Image (cartoon, rainbow, N blue to C red; front, side):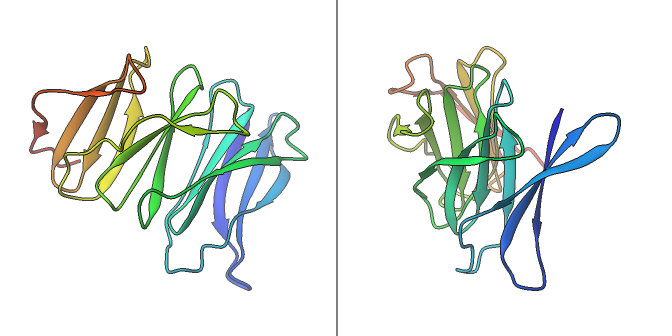
Length: 178
C-alpha cells in the first residue's frame, strides 16, 4: 500500500511530498520535490490514481503534476497540467484512471484526459455554475458523473458520458454545509 503525505519543510520553504509504503509499518520510500509554490499559495493535495501507478500533486500556485510511481523508490515526473485558475488545489481521478478533474479558486472544474499521462489533454471547456471557490470534486463509481461542491453552498453534477461535452444537471443541490 502506498501513502502520500504532502509536507512543507519549514527550514527552506521547498515543497516536498513524502511517499511511504506500508509493509506492516510505514517506510519512507521517496521524497518528491514539487514545483515552486512561492506565489502565495498554501494548499497541497496528493492523490494516487486507480492501480497505484500515477500520482497527482496539486499545489495552489503551481501546476498539478502527474508522476509515474510504478517504482515507488524512483518517481518520475510525467507532465504538468497548466493551472486553469489562479489557485488549483483539488484533484480527483476517475475510477478508470483515464480522467483527472482539477479545481480551485476560479469557481470551475477542469477535466483532463490522462490516457497518456505524459501527454494530458484538456477535455472540454471548464465546468461552471458556482459563485464560490470549489472545495471538493469526485467521480461517481461508474465514472459517468462528476460531482463538485463549493463555498457558495451548492453541489453540482455533470454527466460526462461524453467526456468532451459534459452535460450539467438541471439544478444544483442547494444549502449544503459540509
